[in-house]
Length: 253
Image 1: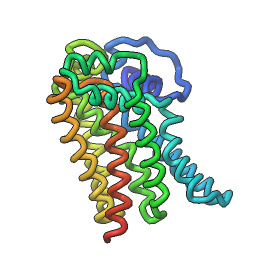
Image 2 (image 1 turned 120 degrees about the horizontal axis):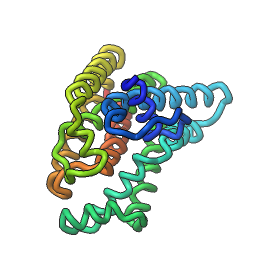
Image 3 (image 1 turned 90 degrees about the vertical axis):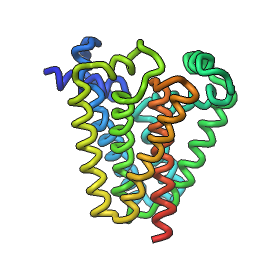
């Protein structure tokens, strides 16, 4: 039952999909981040569904690409894009780490956050318009890989604060189980992509890991450690860079 409740909590927190109500307790949250990749599976399947719908209805490339970019935002309610916006705002302040953390907590949105989100979505849709059908598997697996590594970062990276949901996830006695599950899923997906999508599939995995290392260094240098908004920032940035890898490497091989 704890496992099922953790799955329900993961979908309740990270998507807008209606879920049964469960008590928000540390016990029920124990394996929540282990269920996070399952959210990625749903996002990936919905992206594929949108792609196929566009093919059936004869929609153009722009409509298809816009859907590829917006389906994840709709399904998640923009929770990760919100974290991305908060981090962009904080980084643009060039303030001390403590002040950056305060900016991320501020419910008001700044000009740099708006610029960052708009630029992100334009870049994402533009790249999505260049993806060919041969690399649909890599496209669909991106949300799974990003969530596996986001869970990994949540559990293992140094935290900016000893309080809050992300800090609690890092200290739970289920941490070893979470790491085993998410790393197992990520390794399996990575191997599958390399076998079925060759160099392009491998570049997707490499891109996600490279962004993870970058965000770890960024978090420690600029914020004093990892936080929830930075986890969202990683997820969004990783998916953009993975998408760029599909397009660029796909053209080179």
